[in-house]
Amino acid sequence: MVDVTHTGPAVGATAPAASKRVALKRVLGPAHVWGLGVGIVLVGEFMGWNFAVGKGGAIAALTACWLAGILYTCVAMIDSEVTSTVAAAGGQYAQAKHIIGPLAAFNVGLYLVMAYTMLEVSNAIVTGDLIDAFAHNMGLVGDVDKRAYMVLTIVFLSWLNYRGVLATLTVNYIITAIAFTAILILFFYVKPWAPGDVLKHDGLLTGLPYGGLGILAAMHFGLWYYLGIEGTTQAAEEVRSPARSLPLGTLTGIMTLLIAATLTWYIGSGLMPWEYLGQAITPLYDAARLTGNPYLEVLLFVGTLFATLASANGCINDASRAWFAMGRDRYMPVWFGAVHPNYRTPFRSIVFFVPIAILFAVSTPLDQTITLSILSGLLGYTIMAISVIIFRRKWPLGMISRGYVHPLHPLPALLLLLLCTVTYFAVFLGYGTQLLAMMTFYIGASVWFVVHRYKYCRRGEQFTMPWPKPVGY
Figure 1 (cartoon, rainbow, N blue to C red):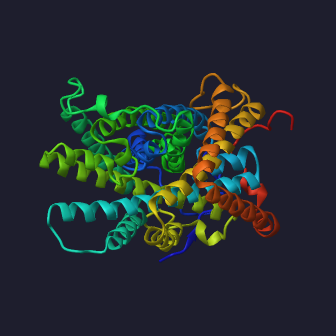
Figure 2 (figure 1 turned 135 degrees about the horizontal axis):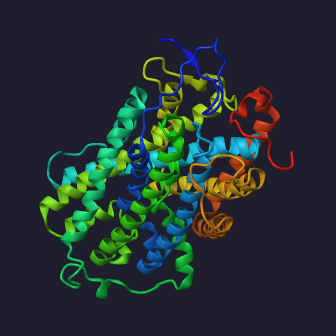
Figure 3 (figure 1 turned 45 degrees about the vertical axis):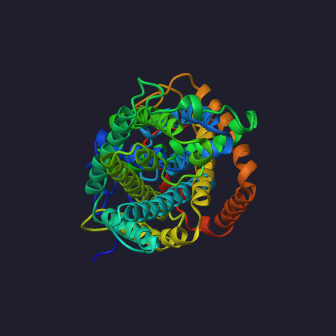
């Protein structure tokens, strides 16, 4: 196997004519971007969101769902503008590198890797629990350690990512569409047009058992409905037309998720009391079982399984691209910046995270892996809001070409900062120790980067966009 390290420029830059390097292949279109973004996130409709119900009741969870929807709409709009302009592997990492500077970029890269890896781990845990529960419900097998399913999920999907991005995201597109269709079929089966026939909202919706504080607490897991939609940016260097495909795939993705999130809450809250719903591992599969229709139970098993696989698949893709970009820029050892000569994938970055994901999957509870992912995502969104304000100030509209311009600036950025602050407090209420531990970890990593790693970076080679000098410089 030939070891080739890609250190060439991003889109719009000119590589030296004498240098031949293996680059990531541009093979993706808008549907693949949609499949990547929605595929990562749709699992949030099949599990995890319902922990918000346990925090404040069903009404609080719905309120958190819509507030989180506003937060992620801001994220999608901001991402669409900046990424269609900075079309490079690493997504928000590449954006922070060009707009703010090295330390911010290093931290954003870590946030991305941690958020996607912990989301991958959460999916592997649910996959193991789901297969184990389904096998026992159907009387198919005896006692099998569900950790074996977790390990198999991580290894198989890593192998798929290793083999090529086009096949990976084509699979994601197909199984994501099937999972979304399963939600729609379940929704129509429970007859939303006939209240009280199947759905029992009148008897199950109990208001706010913990008062207004429950809405605040529910914001913690309300983010799980949408966490990961920003992952569409990680494929920026492998998209055929970034200026068109990235905004189209991202914005249609957030619309899809807003619909799916509301339908999911409506189904779950009408079939299960909030006390049970708030701690269920696979709420939509449980909802299908409660209908008494065995075909629907099998369909939602398949839908939940496909959603977890699509999410884990996309997470491996995104975490490896962020880590690859950091290695290519020497923020991490350059060894990670290698591209496979045949498959054209960042193969070392993919393989590196396999044992890490397995270790967390077999040793960490689901609510904690979800919390670690949410916290890392929140930190990234905070930097994103600051980044777009700086971006508009340094390169105003008309100064450089943009594939998409998000409206009402700076309102989306300010609203994003406000909702992030509210969610930090919500996380602190239930998981204060983890919040402080994560902040300590990232501060320590920043010190390590400044003291040790930054001297290896080639700052002059990192600014690869063909832009004019920013205003004021």
